[in-house]
Length: 102
Image 1 (cartoon, rainbow, N blue to C red):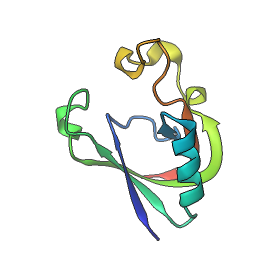
Image 2: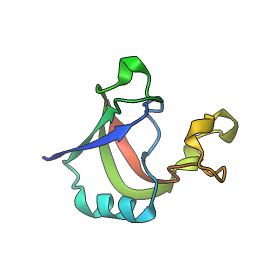
Image 3: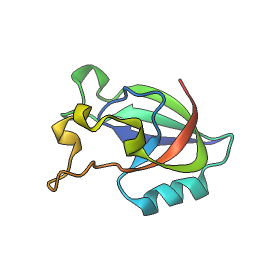
């Protein structure tokens, strides 16, 4: 088993996918991850990450190779403005389905 780390601004949707801003990065992760590997989710050390989440382990994920649209897991009206780019698009539209999360 290998552990991989991904930084994030927060973690509040345990049923959501492992998200990526670019399709190529998602595909690289899919090709790299094996079923026994885990992804460690860590809060960034800057705003907009909540101070209590900065630099902390927020989740551990068992990720599948199934690609998904991250937007299928969220209600657009509930997405915070800083999660949108300058054109109003969600920053991390690409995802890998999560089998389990802790």
